[in-house]
Length: 226
Image 1 (cartoon, rainbow, N blue to C red):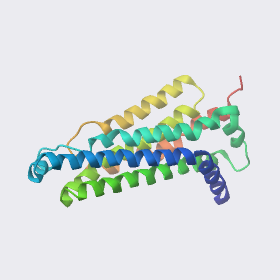
Image 2: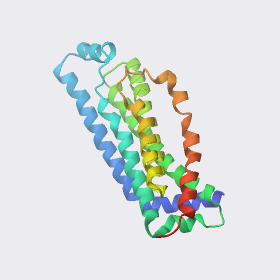
Image 3: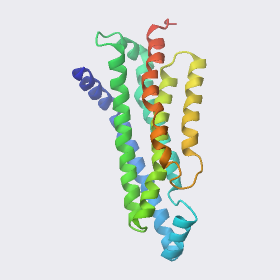
Image 4: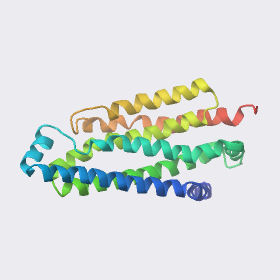
């Protein structure tokens, strides 16, 4: 199985390297904009006032980060799997003797690995942005606040993959609705850090959703050609 993962990872890297570079660059620009937004707050008001607004009133000058993980996940998923659907490339690959499950998991692990690294970069830049102006407590709260947003990005990736792989329209719609249902509560307006205690429970659907992707892949493999 190791050689399967190695071959798929290399193939996916060659196919998506431009997309990965673009998303990384876009994330850096986006985080730079958030840094400018935070820095501007301290140019307009005294630090004590900004701290009071953020730490006591619950204002989030980094709230623009909310949509970034989901957007990156959906874009990367389309770049990764839409080319595989053209000319039945993925369907041909699924008939290789290595087995359907290892082949699919190799593709998914590659995508999840890249997105995890990208989200870690965003989190690191968020720490650098806030650590320069705020005490450690505020930085820690910001990370706990942003963690569900990153988790929503992973759910968006898996559900978008489901919608792309599934050949039946109703099932595609179900994948989209499932993604909205999983991501929406994580992206909703809440008190900073309020979802932190529930994070272990919020991650529980991940492995089930990961294995559930075998169903649309099986449907795609055995569907009749038009």
